[in-house]
Figure 1 (tube, rainbow, N blue to C red):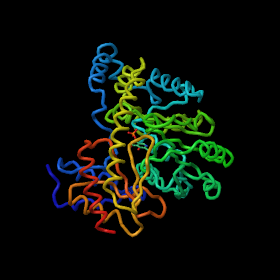
Figure 2: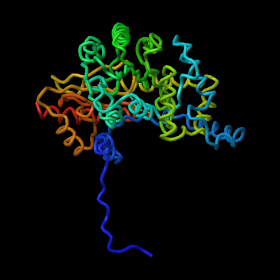
Figure 3: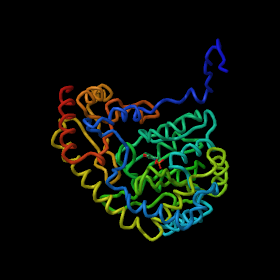
Figure 4: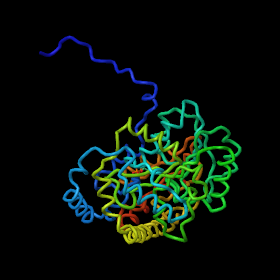
Length: 397
Ligand SMILES: Cc1ncc(COP(=O)(O)O)c(C=O)c1O
């Protein structure tokens, strides 16, 4: 029997849900699925770098050797040998981390959500760089904090700004290496000053580091986690060094916070898939990343050089851009009067896509900025796309 003459439900969403908006990137990505579009918009790693065969062999081996365990529910905090591997590799870099300080999460994006859930109340101060990673702003927004935007320059965020504006903050969110969206790196002096400032002001410092291993020039700078493991929360991800499709990341934090995050994760999804954690452990346990990551680095470094070359050839005078030492992104600043949203519509009409800068700002946006990703587009198409964009920009000057 089917009920008849019943009015449809008028959905009464929670205040929290009313905060949710579709990410502009996801909207742009829909357009960029078309093969004729040259897309510098995505934040996706290049599929050329995915170790497909190695993963296939690891799935086979895990299912053959430990299939029943791999297909069973698992512990909330994660697969113990993988947590041990992560703690050991961080400890080898000077941080002295024990496995019970590591929580496996379903992509570091889940880590951002869980941290928002356990640290932020409505109206709590959350300090973010400006601009910052859009996905973090989205994740934290659900908990309705008061965002405090701190300024950046070529050396990353300014710790003095934190000291001035951050009193009482529940969290400071920072991307020290090859930041998304700007590609900038926080200098060594600023790392020390930031760790000291946060420790003095009792502000938990969240170091989000999905790109740290993708360093193309110079030596990687020390992690802030190693400078103060009692005050720094560190997040890592397998998305950019292995594959994002397995949705695997980790949070490293002092024990009381890890236990609280674990409770929040239990409520959210019980645990991250045991099968994928076991497979990733199988892939990396004998040092695979030590030779895999350098191949990604040299591929991306070449892509980055091509884009920098194309920008200097085709972008008109008055436009500036960052020159990243690693990661996947270049940040472009146009003359003040050029609105990158308007530019984006025109570019899409000519089959070129990028992400306008506006959604990356928690505070007042700079509308003359945009983000370019250089890793998924072929070298010829980088030149073609940047040349087209250069012409559109020139028509606005
Ligand atoms: C800065 C930053 N943090 C976190 C994430 C989320 O990564 P994942 O959930 O794939 O680990 C991304 C993804 O692009 C990112 O750029």
